[in-house]
Image (cartoon, rainbow, N blue to C red; front, side):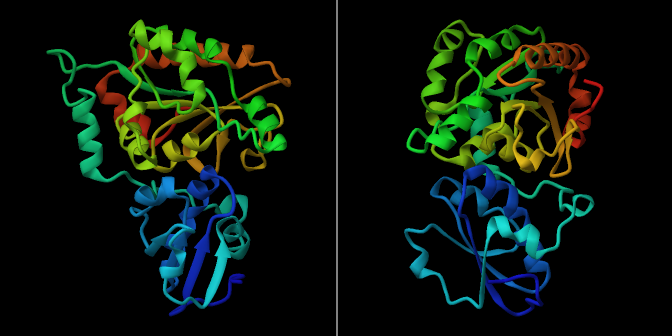
Amino acid sequence: MWRGEDIADKTILLYYEQGLGDTLQFVRYAPLLADRGARVLLIVQPELRRLLASVRGIDRLATYDDAAALPAFDLCCPLMSLPFAFGTRIDGIPSGEPYIAPPPDLAAAWAERLGWNQTGDPAGKRPLRAGFVWSGNPRRHDPTSHAMDRRRSVPFALMEPLLSVPGIAAVSLQVGDAAEQARTAVAAGLLTDPMAGVTDFADTAAIAAHLDLVITVDTSVAHLAAAIGRPVWMLSRSDACWRWFRGRDDSPWYPTMRLYRQDSPGDWGPVMARLGHDLAAAAAAWDQNCAEALSRKARPGW
């Protein structure tokens, strides 16, 4: 097991052992290992294999199904132990530039498929494209995880009023049974839902790459969108996950993320009110010239 010692000219196997979001968050350390002279092998979930091929410094990717084909290695480390091995502290979290990117041809194909290659009107302006996710993976086979998911997810009915904010084009990034909650909104033209054509996280990233903002509960899409550098407004339950710390509305893990924290257990009302206010302000101020500013930093004033 690698614990931070010199790794130059060694081969290390990294492997996931928890969720998709955890893999997306901690794969950021793979390039740092390569910078230390290591050859990096990585075992990932099948849904992430195509996307994580873009991460700098990874020599070989596999899933557990074909891991036997990987070459021999000197050291190994689970992804979530990498912050310990690197001696990471809050003020030294490697965040910086986006470290994941969708394949460029895939991003271009999705833009064409969704009609996003056109500016939208002769003046060159278009609505603010906002992606929405309201539910995580319910994991009904695991009572503890299922209970947690019920605390972090919101009914679509609470999210739906945001779709009518003037000046936005709403896009669903929701998968699973919860996507059915939005069927009426999709039929009414309030929400575009491209997810039937999505096969893995590379597709989701290719869609998200064209969004100006992603509004999501605490699930893997929050990590995905932030890792590719998109502005993310994330809804956080009152008993927030350890990684989001306490008493702050930003994240040292992701420079483009802003947190909307629940004040009391189960009460999403104030969170949705703040989101509605901030989204309306963002849409009112939106024009194509502010896209670059949005990409650099989620502005706390919104």
